[in-house]
Amino acid sequence: MPLEKINKRKIFNDPVLGFISISDELIFDLIEHPYFQRLKRISQTGLSHYVYPGSTHTRFLHALGSFHLMQTTLQILRDKGVVISKEEERASLIAILLHDIGHGPFSHALESTLMEGIRHENISITFMNLLNREFNNELTLALDIFLDKYPRKFFHQLISSQIDLDRLDYLKRDSFFTGVSEGNVNSERIIIMMNVVDDELVIDGKGIYSIEKYLTSRMFMYWQVYFHKTSVTAEFYLLEALKRAKQLVQKGEDVPSSGVLKYFLEKTVFFNSERESIEKFSQLDDSDIISALKIWQTHEDKILSLLSQFIIQRKLPSSLIISEPLSKEKMQELKNRTEDLYGIENGEYFVHQNELSVLAYDDKKDPIKLLLKNRQIVELQELDNQVLVKDLRKKITRYHLCIPREITGFK
Image 1: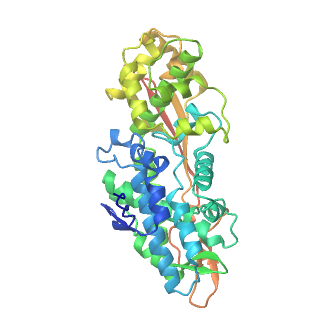
Image 2: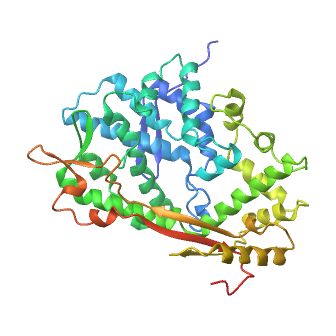
Image 3: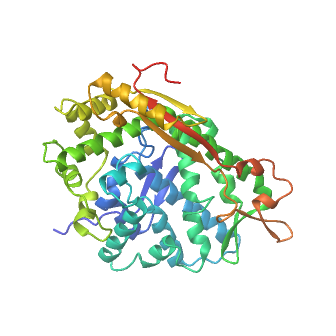
């Protein structure tokens, strides 16, 4: 008796954007692929749930949401007379669906700890190349769009620019799950205002205030969510725990972990094209990290043990966002006091100072362009009726400091 044919027309119910329809068999197969399914086990906002308990959504949801926004945008552009072929539509949908497929567990920073020198964008490209070979080169155009090699520039701009669909989804989504209403953007209106001139993305001039709201929302989300002092501290301790575990493994000490995590703790040199490492990476997710930290809480190495306990039990240090950095001498003093407190020799594992910067709008790099009623194209910062853009072009820099709570009077 023949096997029943799988129905590859699916509808996902997304709590943020509503129903997302999949009607392309290739796209369905990509979503079902283990490389993509892994994103269900990768947190979208790292350890932000330490501050915002509802922020437990995944990169899988974000990828589907971005895909849905691309579907909507392409239809709106077609309605405005932009010619888009079926091949271009499918390729752009695949490109945005897979734009985050190379993300590692929890955060951008963690990938450099596990795979030193390799960025998640490069891993995404490697995954896409592997999928392209597996699916008989049907992803070639999607890769060209993703890599900005396709001459019709607006397709890439919809995926990666200062007002792309990736950002429109994650801002709205992260705002929803964290409950931070300041980050909620009107993505529907911005998409309706999108247009194409000479194969470049532009925004209808009457959408200027929606653009300004979008830019300010992004800035607030950085300072209120992504750069929240507690989640930044938790991420730092997570990185330090993995760094310590890797150092111990390199010295031949036993550090229990899953087989796939142990592979990355043992290996020191990585290459983008190395098939074994990429296949191992495709099996690595948040659960490997959390399971290891739970075990490491009782490890005989005091540094690894303390870091793991502090993360799992949420016993995080004091943290501050300050306008001026502490001097090297003051930082060394804090590290010395930490070493005395814990009876260790490496206070830098627990004392941290890092620069945090946000530039809401970069008018030098791929500026946002608006289409006026007279068909003139003007860069956002040049419009007379803009209200906030002048201030949004200034980089805001602060410094994040964390130090054990038992140490007081350190200002």
